[in-house]
Amino acid sequence: MGNKAAIPDIVIGRLPIYLRALNRMIQENREYTSSHELGERLGISSAQIRKDLSHFGEFGKQGTGYNVRYLYEQLRQILKVDREWLMAVVGIGDLGRAIAHYRGFQARGFRVAALFDADPAKVGERIGELTVLPMSQLVEEITRQNIRIAMIAVPASEAQSVADKLVEAGVQALLNYAPITITVPPGVRVQYIDPAAHLQHMTYYLTP
Amino acid sequence: MGNKAAIPDIVIGRLPIYLRALNRMIQENREYTSSHELGERLGISSAQIRKDLSHFGEFGKQGTGYNVRYLYEQLRQILKVDREWLMAVVGIGDLGRAIAHYRGFQARGFRVAALFDADPAKVGERIGELTVLPMSQLVEEITRQNIRIAMIAVPASEAQSVADKLVEAGVQALLNYAPITITVPPGVRVQYIDPAAHLQHMTYYLTP
Image (cartoon, rainbow over all chains, first blue to last red; front, side, top):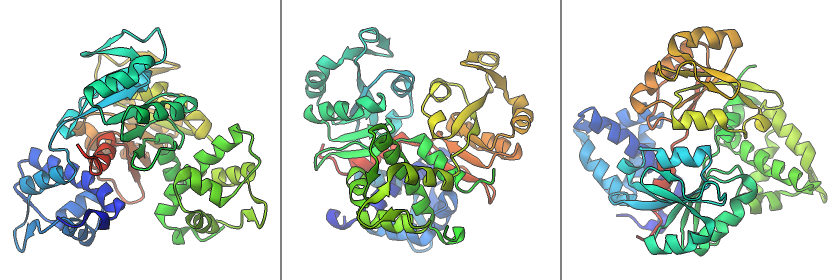
């Protein structure tokens, strides 16, 4: 293992993409792959992939390349998703509901374990195996289940105060779906899901 | 305006984030801002922001900084979202439904104008002002409305064939929600929404 402090965050951000591609290869019953093939699939140069992986050790063999299953398991360990992380979802609108129903998290290391909404009309509603809880129970429930990750699916105007409350409850990683940048104390991580920003990135290149 | 070919894609990718912050400032009735303040809000260095914006011209004044509304309008023009882009959504599961209902696109330059699903049970369903159409009508409807952007919300196993069909219909920008990398011909853009990848990026830093 390399020195954690020395690995650029942008490298860490690419590991889940490699993991996704390797998982696909496992489904295709592929035994070996190469940085060249991974690069082709992902639109990343093979040199970049080799450089990224070299931060963490020596995974490939000259000639045979990478053992797909081994590299997959190593990356799962490095990203700490060789276990199950519990997550809370705050905001049970259309989006929060879609997140709560989404079946793709479990295979990748995550399980939605608590749902919260400020609207009394939604509190008590059953979604899958969970019941929507009121915001007043957020801190207690997150503490009780030792939840470290939360997804924010509330309107932009509420996102900062919800983030504050989640951090107070001990959450250390926030995935924010509200179209607003939120402020968190040092040590807390935030990532953003902002489809409109991705779309605007692409329209730059389009000829109307 | 700078030379388009010379502007790195990573710079283009940050413009929507600046636009989002400026929009927020407009809502807060802010008249002027600075690269320092923008940087503070976004966790990006002020030098980076000045350098990014300098690709496109001279937006700020020494001393007064940036006029929020002016910079906002300039970035909207640069990203070509000072107009309305029509979008198709393919796959009307929980996620496709949430996308179809999402009210945040319109203010940022986009409108969902067509919905498609392969499931006969979903075809004909009304969602807002739209009716879910069968895949057999995809090419015709996208051509008729001159839709250039599509969101893919189908299972991973279907994503590539749906992408192929959309490209055949003339779509030039794909926002892919399926957890798989898709291949498109040159000239077609793809962006990915993969919440699990963002979560895995954060778990690297968490202490279990």
